[in-house]
Length: 260
Image (cartoon, rainbow, N blue to C red):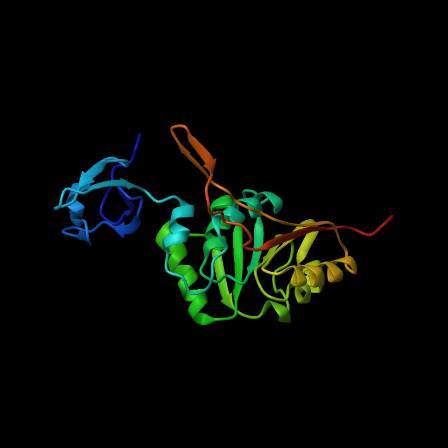
């Protein structure tokens, strides 16, 4: 059964021009915009997907934000990995229920939330972040969308100095010099474990691949994901004039055992 909107819920409001706002429902609260005022009371106790009107008669659709929508609207301390790359990361990294994952470069927590939803309550994400403010922001963003009781440990530390955890299933890196982590990842990952790196430039990818070639990692591949939406309106069907093209390169590899 659909769950009714309640006080404390996060709600995505979409107006007639597809402008989007995320609010948190409060007793006696109100959302103010140039299209008028929307009382939270109009939403509390109603089903998701309801259409309501502001004091000026503007139509507003109210739904719960998806993870993708939340990531694009949440407060940021650092640049986030965009949803078009987060989905492929889950597949390329084969993120599974119960996985033990090291994520370094937590940033604003977009990837952290994506990993946490995939591993479920039986897994664990160990996050390394250099900056206190980024670590705090990420944990607040995670709690704001997923709640406080997540299998997450965030430490302010430098992964270039080493990885404390062992027997990890995955190591996911969003930092500028991932080649400096290769040796640490070899010791921290279980045999067959996967290393995945997100990098903005192909020069960084080339340097990473050079280091991987001298390591115990194999089955390596690098790629980028391009996203193009389409305009579909009556007989007017064409690609949109704009697309989300390059954001970053994904490189993944598996830790292999010695040759018999």
